[in-house]
Length: 321
Image (cartoon, rainbow, N blue to C red; front, side, top):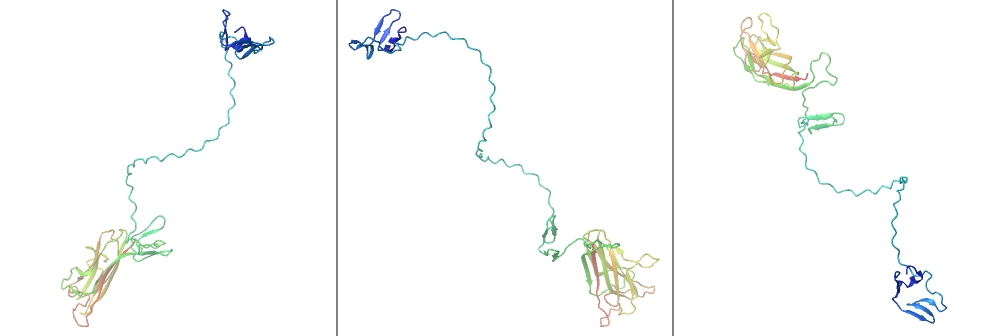
């Protein structure tokens, strides 16, 4: 049926062998007064005209022609313009917390800080605040202390020219109220009992002021001297054969008692304990008379109201340099 397209519409009923020219019909063919019918399709009308499709019967599909050669590849087109930047996407959710890392090694011990205040100390720090004893109060202008302890006291404007010390750091005193009789140990220095004190300076540059008052009597010439340890201090210069003393007296009657004083500033140059004491001496002969040396009463050693019973003492003051 490839050469007879008028029969193409009956392709499902009519089979034409193009080689033998034989026609096979797979359906009924009716010829009536109304025309020629192939199956249900009217092929020829009653007036003899063609009643089938003007398209004719579809011929068989021809064989595939050989493929043409591949054309050359066209040139690369120009690059298109850059598209605009898309909008930034939304922030993603925060990830979950990671696990805690292992504890690092302990660092080296830092240097020890300054000692803070205690019930005997007050520490002013760099910010101007004070810590320490509750014995201190502060009214916004100056502190008030129930007890003030210090190693040095100086005037706020400094020491005046020629001055050699500041305030009193500590005081030690000893009072002798009893009567002692040295007897007949003439021309010999001896320690007067009860007239000895020890002090430990807070600073080696501080000085010590010694004030002494001794009430004593001799039966002739006699005197006293001040010692630091075993060294005599506050005595006169060496001169001929004279006895170097701090103070001397001569009592003529049995009831007489001389009051002698010593006032001296020493520079011990130490922070170790220092002992200050008083020694007495009674001369024999040479116009001095006897060798009796009595403290706090007359040399006659009487007990009635005519005889005095006195006080002697020694007081030392540490003075800040």
